[in-house]
Amino acid sequence: MQFLLAFIVVIPLVGAVAALLPAPPGLKGTGPDQAVLRHGVTVTGAVLVAAIVLAAGFDHDHPSKMQATTDISWIPALDVRIHLGIDGISLPLLVLTALLTFLCALYSYFKPPAGPSPKAFVALLLVLESGTLATFAVLDLLLFFLAFEMVLIPMYFLIARWGGAQRQAAAWKFILYTLLGSVVMLLGLLLVGLKSGTFDMVALATDNGRGLTSSVQVIAVLAIGIGLAVKTPMWPLHSWLPDAHTAAPTVGSVLLAGVLLKMGTYGFVRILLPITPDGMHTFAPYLAAFAVVGIIYGSLACLALVRPGSKGDLKRLIAYSSVGHMGFVLLGIASMTPTGVNGALFANIAHGLITGLLFFLVGAVKDRYGTADLDTLSGATGAALYGRAPRLGGLLAFAAVASLGLPGLAGFWGEMLALFGSFDPADGLSRPAFLTFMSIAAFGTLLTAAYMLMVVRRVCMGEKREAPQLADVQTYEFAAWTPLVALTVLAGLWPAVLLGLTDPAVQKLLAGGKS
Image (cartoon, rainbow, N blue to C red):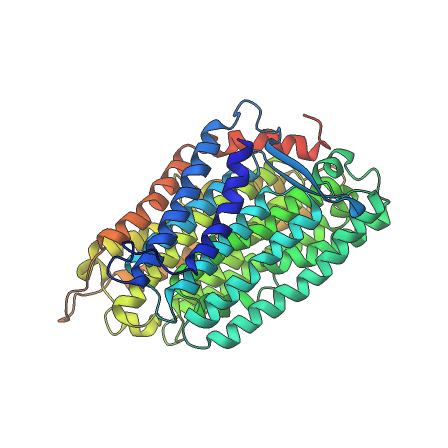
């Protein structure tokens, strides 16, 4: 177990270096480009298999216990350690990252993104995977920061080199926003580590803020929270996201929505809730307020984009929908209750599965039509995907109703639990205020249903016009998308699979490290 976790984090880096080397004779296939793309599938596949084995060997009877731990002194002068470990909170995110990266590599093998040589693309994809996996596995504040920052450069180049129109501006906006947020976050992490005398996240969580004064906690939450909120993204620090998603290649959008946004909310749960509880208690109402504004703002932006004549881009619409969905995650965290935090973690996984699938599907629609502009797609009578490519249209409709939170699918449980957490927030938080937040967020679910159903009506329905038949779902697309569909249904019908992992770990986290 200990070796497996270290293998999962390190092997993508080794694979990234190997991707830049010449392919060995006899392994080039039809050419070096195919060889390096196959190398990406192989490495990400090995990481996924290792993650599944790790999940199978995980002690499910004690999910609140840190398992597969590695603890090696790295910088003794600062007491910085290479400390790795997983519990019921981080394990699902680790497996989700391994799965989505493998599916992106598989998809890219059959449909490489237009741009420079695939060598750099595969290397960047693997570095991105390593940084994301490390973020969910490390248990040292400074290592967390390094892993958190490690993903920025590969994502910048994926957008800037393999993206679409306006890719340079979108990439610069992405890197500037996240770097500025990260500088403030680093100051907060250093404040916590220096004031408490350790950067060890397990020791700090067990101490539960007793070694930090209330004023230090408030400053730390403000500083660290800004950096995490940019990555989440929380309104009003979200404006980099729509541009980045619109310009990014399909697999870039899938990874950005599916795993990178989860790094921010994971930091709130892993660092701020257990280490600075007094500071979180002070800022919880403000966090909830920003969250519900983001829910309504994201929904209204989507309704504006889907309106006929607005020239709305379908990828941009899905990006704005993420602002709303991540608002539910932040609302659950702000309630500071086991119910709300469990809902936030569940919504994290559900959003990764559903929005990852949506970006895959939108990328496929754009490839077939040559555009993601809703007015162009709809035309006079609708794009009529049901008639022209029925399987693709059916999958798009499935992903849309999953995103709007249909009961029986994964999107339902996270949002519902976040609302329940707001109905009865933690002691000391204003219940009338949180009831107001809950009511506003519940109204946001209606807006979400409105714009998602309008997307289905405009893109999938309509008369079948005299036009060439579109290519329906291809075999490689079916292979890349089926796991996401299956897991969305499984998590919706059997939520205990995920909640059984997260709940004991959340209970321990909120109790100050006491099971």
